[in-house]
Length: 193
Image (cartoon, rainbow, N blue to C red):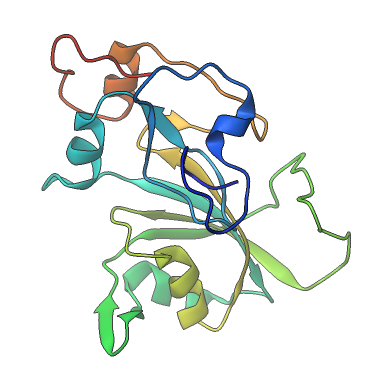
């Protein structure tokens, strides 16, 4: 599913296809690329994107990442201390230190369309970053020679995916939304959903 309501250049399903009655002006905050899964924040409050992703203070995002082959301690440490990734063309960027650890495979993870059950050597990682360059987590694991096989965003600050099933929507009260995201209170008269 595309993290948008309008436009369909890639030919995929859009958020509006979920069958939920979204309020006028709802937009995605912190989009996911087409091949990624997990937590997507939707709001009518235009301040949220600015406060969350354009502020000077960092805000954490946590991903569960299935990578090809077994990750050793040395490569895990490289992720933790920062790796060099290509931003575009000849522009490179060294990622700041992050939290990276090996985790068990997530329980009750649904197969995706086109998945076939097969045994491929792999490792599940939990990676928490505080910035989001284009496809950053995928590029980070590729930089340690472990291509990404599956990427699931499970948290943005204290907003957790939890056991929310794919395609489901959970509404959060505005005060709770801002508290969980560690943002200053919303401006009066603007609601967040």
